[in-house]
Length: 268
Image 1 (cartoon, rainbow, N blue to C red):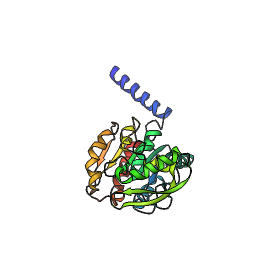
Image 2 (cartoon, rainbow, N blue to C red; image 1 turned 45 degrees about the vertical axis):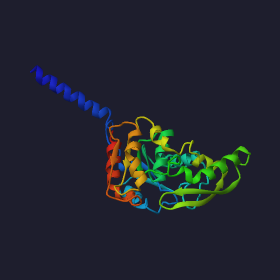
Image 3 (cartoon, one colour; image 1 turned 90 degrees about the vertical axis):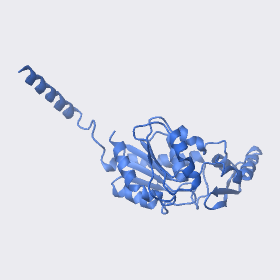
Image 4 (cartoon, helix red, strand yellow; image 1 turned 90 degrees about the horizontal axis):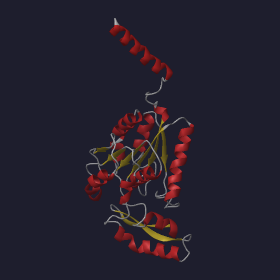
């Protein structure tokens, strides 16, 4: 009899907790999840990341597929803080529509910047898809050293706000000309600055990361994936995912896994 009473009491207590806190552990609806998606260097929202963005929208998530400062059209028209602010504004718009689980996703240089954002702002998770473009890489820095020095001298001489011709670099395409101010160029391309390999170790503690490393990625990125992944903060949902894909098509190849991972992280 005592056992029955104790069992009944336990059940009543559990039911009362459910009534008092009906959503305490409920998973958010899809529309309460927001994802910012960012393209790679020289890209645009409709190139390579469009399949991922469409899949996320198809899952019911709020999605902002942004054109970032490193697009072919924009040519670094704002500094890194300006790019952070663009993402924050997109998240603010999602919050206004009911999103309370927020994820930042990016491909290639967009993946690097997604990790940078998670180092300076709190998010619920990061999807870093074949992240690359860190300007301190041994294959990168020597190609742009003269341009970085030019920008540094302009800034030191009070010409930081003046536009000039500089170069960007990508392993698959080599160097290409860009026009921006000396101060903005130095902010992005200084090998002692923020857009470097140090980004991986600066992601805020408690932030889960899905690191997508396609099996046919560029050799330099494939070589550094274990080191970069290891530098990320520990988390139950930290994961290295390696789809059968090349670098350019990795966002689409990772779409299904990204949706599953976002749902799992959102339930915690």
